[in-house]
Every structure is written in C-alpha cells, then in structure tokens.
Image 1 (cartoon, rainbow, N blue to C red):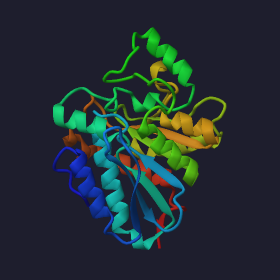
Image 2: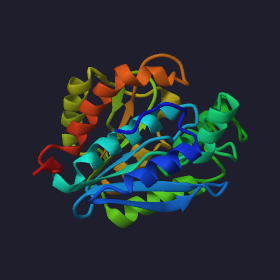
Image 3: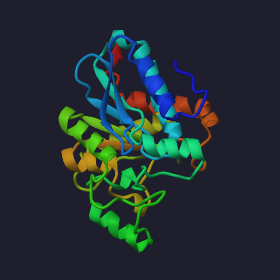
Image 4: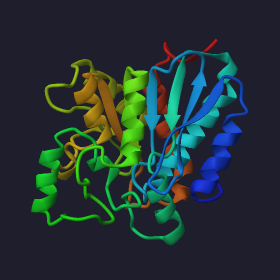
Length: 272
C-alpha cells in the first residue's frame, strides 16, 4: 500500500504512478496534458479493456481525493495478477490546480487558467453559465467559472476523449466533501443508476442526494450520463470544509473503499 505521508503534489503523483507501473497487470499511460504541461495519468489494473473508470482530483483543494484514488489503485495493483476484469483510475484530472492548492495554500479549485473543470463539461453548459453570471461569476478565478465554451480546457478534453475511445460502462468522480452520492442527470439517466447509488451509499454510510443548484450540469458525471446514457456518479468523500486535512484519510478511506468496491462490482473485477 502506498503511504500518504505528504500532500499529493505533482512530484508525489509521478512517483506513485511509476511505482504502480511496476506491478503485474498494471499499465500506466498519460491520456493528455494539463495547461502547464503536466501529464494526466490513467492507471489500468487487471486484464482486458476496463469497463469502469474512477477519476479524482478535479478540484485543486480536493487533493484528499487524489490520495484516496492512489491508495485504491495501489490496493488493486497488489493483487492485479489475480484479478479477472480491469478498472481504470485517473487519480488527478487537474494536476495544475492541485499543485496550486498544495504548494501555495490558496483556496483554489480551478485549473491554471482559472476555469473550474467540473463546470466545463458539455452538459447543459449554457444553463450553468447563466447561473454563474447571475451569481456574479463572469471571469476566470479560483472556482466556479466554467470557461469560454464547453471542453475549452485540455484537462476536460483528456477525460472526454478517453471516454469516447474506451466506452466505459460507468464512471465515478471522486470529490470532497459531504458524504453524499449524486447519480442522476435528467431524462438521460438509466433507471438502474439509483439502485447502485443506494448500494454504494449503504456500503459507505453515505447519503444519496441531489447537488446544490450551482452544481447541476457542467460536471463529468453529468456529461457522461448525457453523452452515453449510462450511469455516472459523483461521490463527495469526507466531512468538513475543503481542503480536508489529509489526516482525515485514515478514518474516511475504509468508507471510500467500500463504495468503490461496490461501484466496480464484485462480478466484474474479482480475485481468481
């Protein structure tokens, strides 16, 4: 298991994924680069084309999600040669924003251009933009500015290109905080998605919920549901105020692991 001794800045992430690449049945690739040229890594663990995607690190201050995703990937990698099926983990979608938050201590959620990645996906983006304007958010800044157009940011495009190429059955976006799980996006949502959300919530002691109005649309799970009519989930890990201290990870991670295990599905990724 990878230890979480320091805040997961970019150099930590690179060391972690390189270590993961040394395990059997683990493949590490860069699916794109951030605005500042940092690699956006995806770790595939197991055998065959992955059917599930777990993505974290969308928001700079939510770097506890990066630590959780790397830990989960490490646990799977440790038994990778005995797994049937495979899962993909993108531990940090927004490495520039994470670097800003980790190294400067700024309350920073956006990417290096001041665009909130989770407002930049093409899922009712115009509606999100109107709500931003109504709230006085009209230009780049630390949070909630959705960019000049959908998928304007390289970080967003790296994830959408990956999903269009691999065609995952379902995806999960790891955020913080609230111990809540969001699962729907209008009429595009398959009926079965709520059932799995409830199973994940039960496993982790979380609540199935609806996000606040400003967070409706523009996000990764919203885009995935509307684009593919398949299940997408947002999991808000932990309780408190961002950035959650990394010391919270030890107590919170067992809940997150249980949720991720249900999401992956014991029949789709299991030890043989």
